[in-house]
Amino acid sequence: MHDLAPHLLAFLFIAAFVAGFIDSIAGGGGMITIPAMLIAGIPPLETLGTNKLQSLFGSGSASIAYARRGHVNLVGQLPMAALAMIGGALGAVLATIVPGDVLKVALPFFLIAIALYFGLKPNISDTDRTRRMTPFLFGLIFVPLIGFYDGVFGPGTGSFFMLGFVTLAGFGILKATAHTKFLNFGSNIGGFVVFALYGVILWKVGLVMGAGQFAGAQVGSRFAMKNGAKIIKPLLVVTCIALAIKLLADPEHPVRIWLGW
Image 1 (cartoon, one colour):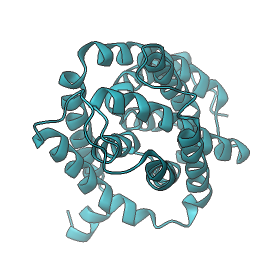
Image 2: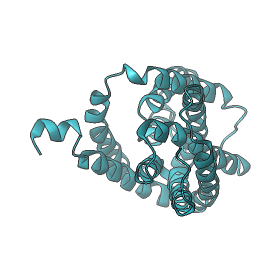
Image 3: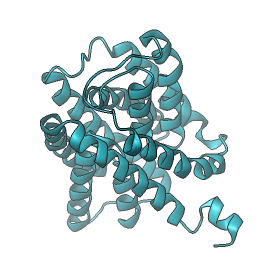
């Protein structure tokens, strides 16, 4: 079952490559890979589980690329990544009892707010600024919450991490991007372990897409490091708005149902 034809695997590989490229810079790769797997005929639960497997390759690949250029110390960030992993695992376990409609209603508006913040705030650059929260508090409070969200729902996780690093930790946008990918890797591991235990991962599909993610993230992270804030900032804004529009375009979205659209 779910033994996909070669042309569908090729389609998913390309989708994962594009997602890995975008995700390594601005996040939001899931808005490409999840619809692609659904189009290929993979059931929703297997899609979520397999998406966690393939996204590990993208976030891991980008983390390695950024670390090699000195933008993130992976060893020093292990405690934060572990907290993100715990949050991701708890979110995946509790996904069935968290009110998903609340998340679906709120998420597009959160994403639009993030896009407006990064788009309209003029002094966001690659230069670090004064932090508003100590690394200890940031890691203890903010990181596991976003990891939990990633396990429960997922879309926009990278954008939320980026917002936290820039506004609370005072990171420049390139440094924030590098650190975001490693924490995203941690939360992906947490969700992946839970989905693997539930047996809802299609390993062949996940590994083929993982290869695409790895390659796309390598290209994307190098592109980001070369261009810095001038490419990361606009791509982050566009990604957030595109994801918000995609969510609101769903005929099953609660807001559209409430308004009778």
